[in-house]
Length: 531
Image 1 (cartoon, one colour):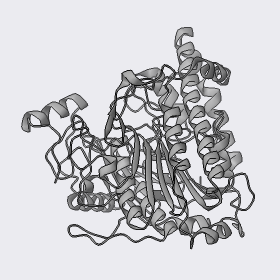
Image 2 (tube, helix red, strand yellow):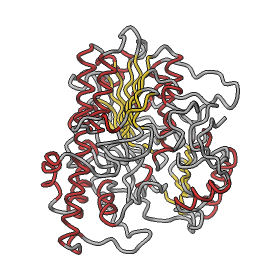
Image 3 (cartoon, one colour):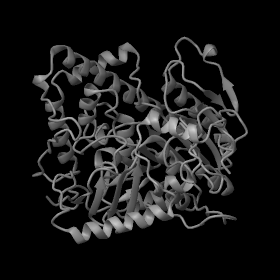
């Protein structure tokens, strides 16, 4: 199957005109990232979930069909804010432990500037609301140099850690000041608070300066929590079960132009624990749990979408909307964590891709990316075109830099050349694609995409798999034995990258054992500066 884009072949004057109107005027930039949301969980990517505000951005912007992340929260956030592969900036694994290895310090390095520092140097006011997850656990509030307001943001509201309650998140911060969970109102809900904080930053912004805002929603990350009245609205979506809904999402994706009309929905056997059960093979109790959990998950996304609508309204009320660029993405694919029911949810969320968060197959690393200019309710922007440009989360910083007309600073230490590319050309001409070589590693799951070929493995104890993504985007036909020289060539390229980007050596240890191993080696985990 040759993967092609079937809609909107000609860009015309829409996005190109909108871009030309903002490129010389230092546009406001609103970068929105959600958490653990699968490739197909937006209406504009095939979902039954109601996301009208995000869909409006997509309808009047450009959607990417080949955008990738790192497969996990901390690494993706590190790559996003620095424009570099995560290991190079000290976030090769998670914030759970400082491994005292250059690529694995548990928080982002001071050696390279963040997106906020780059934009601030270019004359932007900088704000962040939401999940940070780039500071070593247990070091919050200390002068370690890795808090948001220590890394270029003028104002910050949100939770520093990777997970927790939506009703009583912790550790919650306003700039450098800790907020006690006991002081939160009874009706507090983290997604809404992230939105309200972002809207407040906009209302108080000095419009004589351009604005860069990073909104990092925690939704729909576990735990699954939403108001019951919102869950009830979503339950009817899911009574037919995941087999029917997965097929329906794929048919919708073909109608939207993501995949050819003759493409067939792949059915994957579970990589780790056998055959995937059909919906009718579940017990009634399991079916009801899946319906309720999926409805909760959907409600969490819909509440986030409501919030994006409020942010758009705040910009409109401030008179800033027509000169604003929006970027929306997810940090990784949907997760299979916590057991069978969640895995079956993730099968639907990641339609049609294989595997899940934390692995480097496409279900783990493929994300929606939407870039939209100006007021999404007007007709002077794009028309919902698709770009097939292969892209990586390290491309977000150079894209924002080109949009804003700002320069990357000279560095006293390290390499000033960014490994990513600006995606502006892919926005203004969706028919143009640039061949890329992109690299991935998380918890010894490794991959390289070189042109149309992808070499990938689940971890460093399993064999490499080779796929031709141009005809096999769903990673079904392993070509490793058919093209051994190609596999060997790509493996060597990956190894060369790993040696020069602080990736090695790899440690294939379960979460708890990995933390214990490195704490035993380095008992002082007090969150000192990672200089």
